[in-house]
Image 1 (cartoon, rainbow, N blue to C red):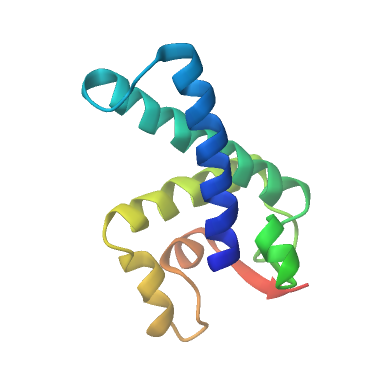
Image 2 (image 1 turned 90 degrees about the vertical axis):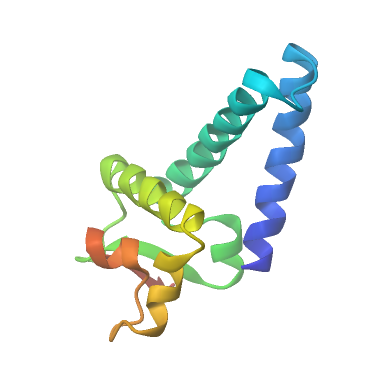
Length: 122
């Protein structure tokens, strides 16, 4: 999780800098909202690319983990997009979907349970 956070922070710093260079200060108002949406899309692009190409983000590679569909196939773009949106909603709701792993018999996150995907050791 910490490795993933380092990647996310790095992406956000780089692309917030690009955003600032193009649009200027975004500390309040509509620009702030636009910057948040912009960064969410950038992070989504990173996750979708990783999940659909190899099933692994940089951090997942370090830990030898892989996200796959129920049949162990790499996620389709549609499933990866749904996973990103549901995981984002889970994060916004105080991480409840991530905490689901504690009570799930297969130790799946709620979004993985709903989408019928799983994280395996690669």
